[in-house]
Image (cartoon, rainbow, N blue to C red; front, top):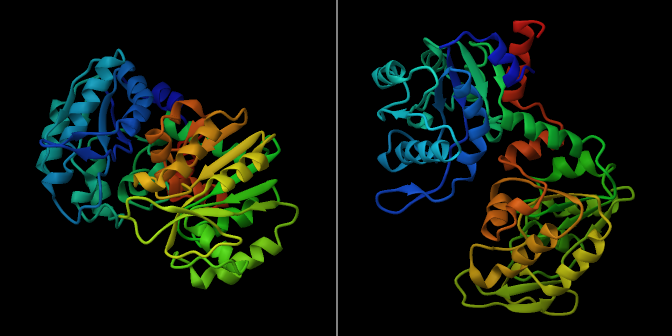
Length: 405
């Protein structure tokens, strides 16, 4: 795969570069504004490099899950926030935005406005259903009049969308600085990480994480299983979990994983915070080994946190994907908060695996205190499983077409 340095060396002054970023930031308020700028900040190093080289930057991204044009999911607030972030970090350049649709007359107007060393942002790619279908005509429209493509959206590399795969098949393409950093970290996790190496898995479904377990079980020293998926493992051990959600079709799979994972140790919850529902004002800590669960397990309890802390003591590498509880609800947030603090203070190399886990890391203020926070949860898991990510495959193919560096 070629990198950003290769592209800048090959580009001519004033060339136009299409950059696929992940600017899928949460919005709030009226008028709407960006409430979490993490993904925007992650995109800045690549943008600053291209702007400094005097290239014309045309940014594209999705936002939310629209089924067509939706003013509530316009990237207009993102354009405004991005301009402010660039200015605050020493790259005060215009960020042009025309709205409308990501291609057609609106795009042509935008391209006419963006000069060398400036940035333009296309409207939400998913306003056009052809984006998710990797439609060739949509890819043709996205690349028209442009000379290069940079994929800096690692979080979408597992999607075969037009702005991820189709454009890389049509323009000389490379990975951006964010993609380069993600691959560096994740390659180490599935290669030769410093040991002892522990993986913490949460989330709702065992089936979502089975690939990671099977790929890593001969490499890791242990797994800590928390969150909703722990219920299925507990059910496999015939622990009664009351009305907690259990993935019934995966109980036998969980039992096999517990029994056939080589020398890897397993740590499961021994107590939990139980309530009748998510809207309850408080929960009750129940001993899962001796007590009766009347309701749902919505968080881990203090004994489980202590058990995990003892297991992780001495670890040199930790990968965390999936929060231990429903941390968005105050009565069930303490387990995730304690876990986050435990990992932030741990001397190991701690990698947080995107999605809800990254959101938890930011909420509890530890994102800057761990080694790395992945920008894509699904992409990170698939990469650790050893799957070929369509976005990365397309970049490799483009590198072969472009020849030696």
